[in-house]
Amino acid sequence: MVRPASATPALVLSHGPGGLGATRSLSRLGVPVTVVIYDDHDPARYTRLSFNMLSVQGEDHAERESNLLELLRSLDMDGAAILTTSDRLVSFVSVHRDELSRKYRFNLPPTEMLDGLNDKSREVRLIESLGFEIPRTVTALPAEPRLLDAELRYPLIIKPHSFNAENVFPHKNAIIPDRRQLEEFYEVWEAALPSVLAQEVIPGPDTYSWVGSGTFDTNHELLDYGIKQKLRCLPAHFGGSTCARSRDNSEILRLSRELGKALRYVGHAGVEFRWDDRDRSFKYIEINPRMPANVGFDEACGLKTVWNSYRIALDEEPDRLPRAQRNGVYFLDLRGDSYSMREDGLSPARIIGDYLSLLFKKTNGMYFAWDDPVPGFYVGWRFVMQKLRGLNRRLRRRVTAALIMS
Image (cartoon, rainbow, N blue to C red; front, side, top):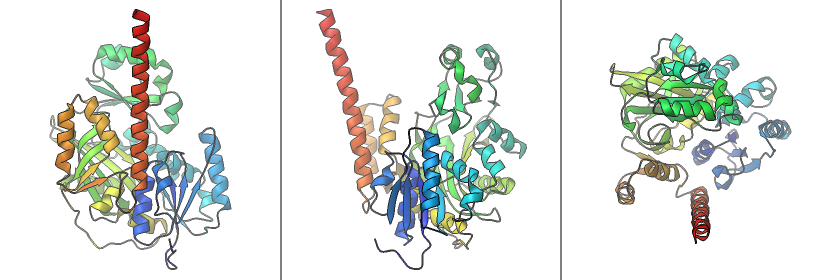
């Protein structure tokens, strides 16, 4: 790929599918992108749209982050715009912002705010103090399940305070439908209790959840903003989007604008709200201070959110031409969505029928793109191999059981 002489390079720190989406969006606009791969299985490793591809190694996160810092010190990319795609890497850049800002360009919220947003117990207190409604939450779990049972209604969702809790609770969340399973959770995850919080689950279908993606400028004004309505999630009904559609929602737009102003936020953010029928209002769920996993969907909807984040990182004027979102575009994470529908107990015929219906709609995949197909094939291959390994394990267990019984 020929490097445009006029474009400032971008340095995408890729840790998940958001790195792939950011790389594709900027490269298609002529920006020379260097991708730094944080995880060996990152799909961005296989994109053909990057100008350069680097990776960091390490036995654990501490070693990887140390190696990443040394890599950034050694690169001949002075003035490049840094874009981050995971909470961990946002925190990394924030921790080293004084040193990195002498060489690179980025525009992040203040360290204290990022620390608060990356710790959900602090986040919910901050958001509630700003006047936004949130689900009922217990940030410090009591010592006995009966005490939590008395404070929140079922079902509950248990979430880690931050990415740093993965050593004691390696899950995005846990759904607790009743007292019996709460007691089981306490028994199994006793060591993790100080590292998690509990929230009431707002009842209703997946379509009650709405997600926004966009950039706040240095005046905390919201620029292009993609809004999508969830259709399916993983875990089923309680996780990140696996199938969604772009759809305008003036209330979500208003709330997102007010949230950015109240936080004095700058940079890219993914924001989620959920409708609550009980009091006819939207409740705040979370804000992710980074490029979200499905940021490439914004481009499919005609929005230049990644471009705006790149310009804000350079402290340059973003594209302020107002653009209408292209509505009715479907987002699909095929791998995660197939898990979600099976987890939800849907029949194979229903699953196949749903996917066949998408053939007649404008659909954007998280991994596959016609001008950059290899990441999609790679993710598909890993998915098939994983299923084959699982099938092999089940067959071996059945054969072993049959031999024991014979």
